[in-house]
Length: 123
Image 1 (tube, helix red, strand yellow):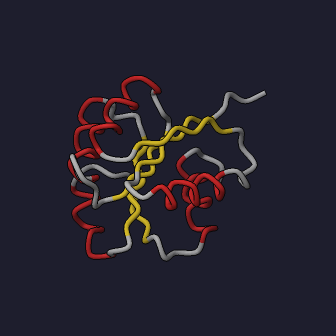
Image 2: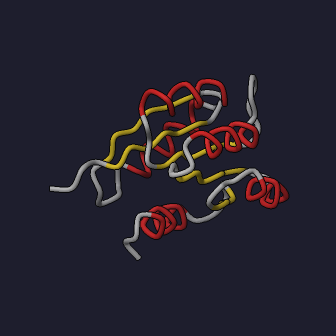
């Protein structure tokens, strides 16, 4: 049996976090999911939870997703960070901050599941 994939969902909107969790529940892999509402909490939970993957929003209070991504990648470079945003113009900034990939929140739900599979080597 495979070990569960640990996923940290980081978004300041509870509805967005619940939606992502619902989507992930349809995936064929066993998951452990935690949630953070801003970048500071994401750093704390990354230290504690050691996720394999972080789904990171860009615009958040306390510490935005771009800075949180840069800090996560500097400390834990093996953690895969997928930046999600409603604003496609954040793509270059997200990748420059160290994100492994960028997806627009308006993309089809299957796009996220496909990216997760690719990151985990399940192409």
